[in-house]
Amino acid sequence: MTSLRPSKPSPAENPRRVISRRTLLLGGLGVAALSGPAVAGYAGVEATALLEVTRYALKPRGWPSGQRLTITVLADLHAGGPNMGLQRIRDIVDTANALRSDIVLLLGDFVATHRFVTEPVPAPLWAAELSRLKATLGTYAILGNHDWWFEQTQIRRVLAAAGIPLMENDAALLGEPGARFWLAGLGDQLAVPLGGGHFRGADDLPATMAKVVTDDPVVLMVHEPDIFTEVPDRVSLTLAGHTHGGQVRMPLIWPAFVPSQYGARFAYGHIVEDGRDLIVSGGLGTSIVPMRIGVPPEIVHVTLG
Image (cartoon, rainbow, N blue to C red; front, side, top):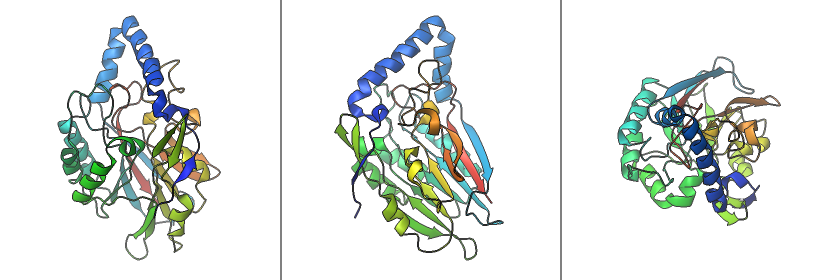
């Protein structure tokens, strides 16, 4: 059974402050639109049309020399137009499949919940597209905060129907003998809003790590990167989403807009602290408004070993 514990307050993700965040962001974008219409227009194009594959190659602590593993990471899909319609999701899946990775990991936030959705994409449809993902070791998922807040029951159902295991405070030993590793997935850290910028998390890191019962290396999936301060050395690599890389990298908005209690510390990219490795994806979709500036949608491809 998943135990719920209070998580540290994260004001940027407090649902009771969404209006103030939206006002801030729309205000900043409004200034940009007035001072340069091309900037605002590009922000929509960047979210809708661009798609990058960001590649990392590393040998993190505890990962055996010569043990090669390729990982495709899809984070923060936020299905729903104008920037994440059904065809766009199909294109993302096709691009991901072309990478021919050993495993595909989905890091949560599957639905768009902003007020500007122009093309709803029902959960069974985006899940059917994700079911087309191909990898030797399969596709695995965790839930994000938006999944918990808005459509949790349906999202769990469609992922199960798509044959995509949900890793929630769980760990599984994968791979062939001599090249095995543990894949662990953490429950969401902002699962239940309590008000006042506080949340009750569905995450249980100690219980998750207790399921790792051999010396094989560990890859950990989390939605919010803030938990990285608590991740033990036993984990070779932590993979996170949630931040969208800030989504809008503009003066006065970024890094203040990064939804993390640590500001820009875990906003994006490959972060190494005390010999521990974290990769934070910039994600695919959008939150609050369907725009991106300076943080194109990306698929992350990681090669270990």
